[in-house]
Length: 284
Ligand code: NAI
Image 1 (cartoon, rainbow, N blue to C red):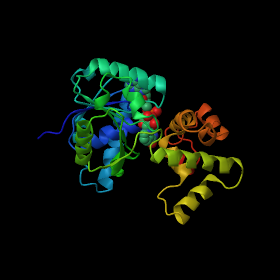
Image 2: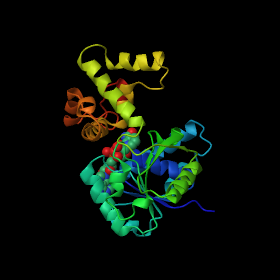
Image 3: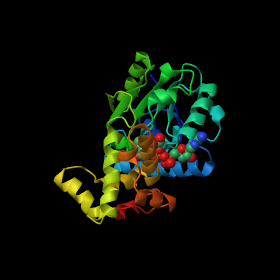
Image 4: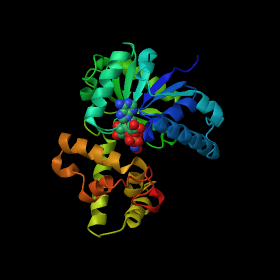
């Protein structure tokens, strides 16, 4: 059976990683974003990711040209007209997501399943932008997508059991286990991670320790693979600030208000790896 075609909307950090992982597992992919420059940067990044997976001896890593050959890119929303699956990985902003869901709902066939990669937005609220809330589900892919073999799977209040079953099967084909999580802002992962990153930035601000020392404590004392500040650089400080903003309004203004140095860095365009300057040397 040929693997299903998957449309991915948003070709930033996550959409790029998701498209790459789908294609290296045999799925034809249609990757959609707002302009050709973003799509061209995404293709270049996918080429790098293919080479990295080969270097790391991933048995699924095929020839980079073959993997890229499965990925079509477009700026045309009309491409959604024959979508079977739509994975949404656009900016973590209510206005942006609302427009994307409304348009996708108008253009995609009614049976198409919408998967949201949101970091923190409740799936029930995103599903309400569509007329198909039974076919909207959250899947929290993590970065780097091809390297992380578990994802949170979040059904909204109206998501059907069939949507969840089919989504788990799609994920199993990518070698990913789905961990079911109740719909709630930030799910489990980002309630924990965003609080930790925000507090780590505060420790830097208060002069308690520098970024490398904080990361070292988490790696060497806790046994974490990465510290919170190198993780923040990898995710993108803009996405961290946007995710905290969702948690601030939906969970607790006191616990999740993005701390000042984080907001300042975002305002200055110092966004971590994506801009070449972050908290850690590896962020550059
Ligand atoms: P990003 O900022 O790298 O990429 C977002 C992309 O969405 C951009 O390329 C932008 O041009 C595109 N976009 C915005 N409006 C659009 C529209 N109307 N049509 C088509 N494309 C549009 O953000 P990133 O990091 O890829 O995040 C995407 C989603 O995934 C967000 O919801 C984020 O919270 C979530 N996420 C991010 C993770 C990370 O490590 N960066 C991890 C897990 C989830």
